Amino acid sequence: MGRKIGGGEERVRPRVGGMTGVPDPGVVYPMAGVGRVVLLRGVVDSELVEVGDYSYYDDPVEPERFVETNVLYHYGPEKLRIGKYCALGEGTTFVMNGANHRMDGPSTFPFPIMGGAWAEHFGLITGLPGRGDTVVGNDVWFGYGATVMPGVRIGDGAIIAARAVVVDDVPAYGIVGGNPAKLVRKRFGEDEIARLLEVAWWDWPPEKVTRHVPAIMAGSIEELEAAE
Image 1 (cartoon, rainbow, N blue to C red):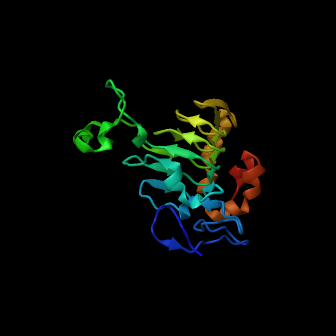
Image 2: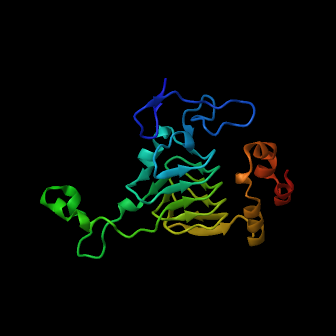
Image 3: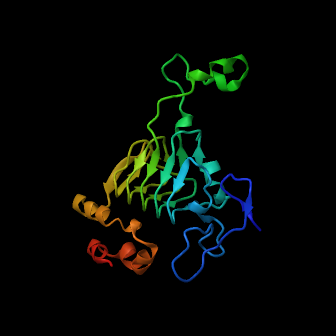
């Protein structure tokens, strides 16, 4: 039986991943018999959200509704861009620029959204300054309950600790945690990070990735650089 996904009105028949060959990035449920893990590309139907191949979300309660329940105050025009091969733990939340209130007057209360005569002043809460798109690189791991605030940019290979509240940009291969999140350390030295970014294994064709999964998961940078 199909399930409602991504806020759309149509119900679609779930596509489940197979056990042989290169995994299909277009399936909804990549793990046979597991309904809590979805590939986001198959459930996102918003023009304001872009997700790369194989990035997934894990949640026991309707993970298909990721855009509706985990991308908050998203009225545009800012976009949420998530790269490839990202792992989003349960409760990963993106707060978008629509959550902002005016802070330059005596009150931060958004009177016009209450309607009535107050609605005449709607222009006072539109066009608030923002930091632009929220951008997540490739191969980023989000721990349980992580929150990303508007306009943050997260580099490739970063790790966001459980319950972290990310208010500032995160460097490539950085590990951040806390509220507000601070850099704990980098996973590799600067030279190694530069080499990994040059390899950019996430941009390889899926067939090449499949051949080199052991090296990607547990190998050396030299092995990735020599991969054909």
